[in-house]
Image 1 (spheres, rainbow, N blue to C red):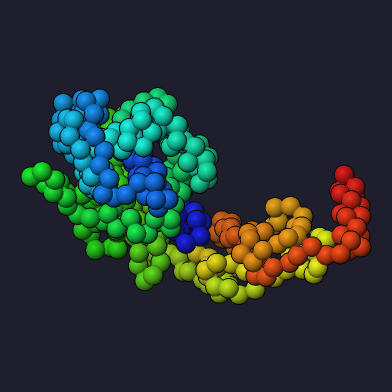
Image 2: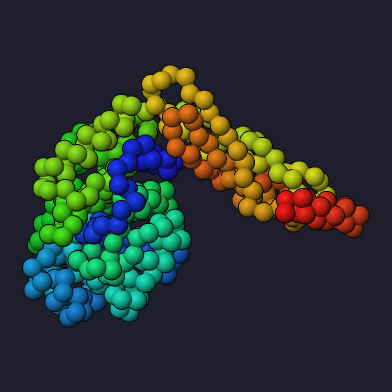
Amino acid sequence: MDAATGAVLFQIRSEELAAPASMSKLMTLALLFKAIKAGQIKPSDEFVMSENAWRKGGAPSGTSAMMVPVNTKARVDELIQGIAVQSGNDAAMSVAEGISGSEAAFAKLMTEEARRIGMSKSMFANATGLSNPDHLMTARDLAILARHLISEYPDQYAVFGQKEFLYRKHKFYNRNPLLNLGIGVDGLKTGHTAEAGYGLVASAVQDGKRLIVVVMGLENENQRRDEASRILEWGFKSFNTVRVFDDGEVIGQARVWGGQRWYVPLSSKGDVTLSLPKSPANQRLSAAIVYKAPLKPPVKKGDQVAVLRLSSSSSAQSEFPLYATEDVEKGGIVRQGLDSLVLMALRRLAL
């Protein structure tokens, strides 16, 4: 996936639901980052390691753990590292209980957040990714989640590239096998259970271009490493990033029904780019501006009022939000009345 546009450059069975193992902890962290960004939680806050979290995800569980002692407190910033670097199940459960009171309640939040950010199929039963028939994700949804973390929480994202973490004399090393390969990888998360096999969500940057790769259900660690690195290197070698519109450039205009003015200019926030295959060299581009509904005043500068859909003869469709660049207030009674009549006529013609 191209991280800038969300365009899928290559996929095999990307819509199939499968056990994600610890890769689903990315959603646990996404909800924690969201709470921090909203000011509801501070990195210096502390969560208790309950006996439930300790027994199911800590030292007694025999699974990957941050080794927080039972009934002690750990800082939120420590728990973040314990999840991102060590993949601690105890840390993930402690976060879930600290935010929602119980892991079950937190899992409902995870599924709700998934739908909100465009993950259409994934469903969550816990905060850890430990095997559960009701805890499933798709490769596409994992890529969407990784892109969300990269774009929405840039201040927190660096933790996924952190190579080691020291906690109470326990030194943990990041399990992401691509971090040390010199191919620009700076995150995100591995996963492994007997049911899920070996999986990885990774992101890398080369020459300013960021790609996201997801592999699931592989047989061993070496296959996971080799497959993910091969796909990333293929993506960087095979695609160019083409800038179609500049940040703030007027891309089109929207009809304002009943407004003081008939039209309002539209622009994007940030450059509009496409990932195009290097071969063939000549690509036919198509573009369309799609409106959510007939636009009525008042329209405020910065309101999202449409979506730009771009595609090429050899690439999937990408969407970019378009925003009003000016305010448009309500027009006079005559203008509003005439526009209402025109809209009614258009609706009847569409029936």
